[in-house]
Length: 116
Image (cartoon, rainbow, N blue to C red; front, top):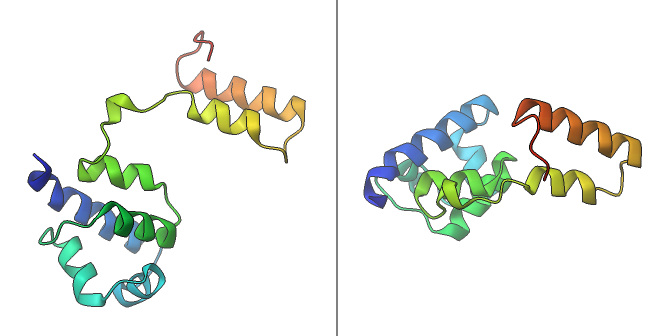
């Protein structure tokens, strides 16, 4: 099943790179991988390790978990759904009122009445 996910993760990386208006050379340099290796990942020819996915996510400024899910490393059904609420609650840069407001908005977009 993981082999079928290679083109998906590669296409996703390419899309994110293009959205960030980065060349393949720039992303490869930022992620610390070679241009040919990144090209092979994007074309679904190579299976990147979790470490490489993390480096690419950092360079693209996206969640590593999103890449792990697309690569079949993480099961999206096993993801902890309270992570957004936890992140808001633990953010020291936000006031109590800001945290409450953000959590309320988040809940209104997700499940409404669900209390995390």
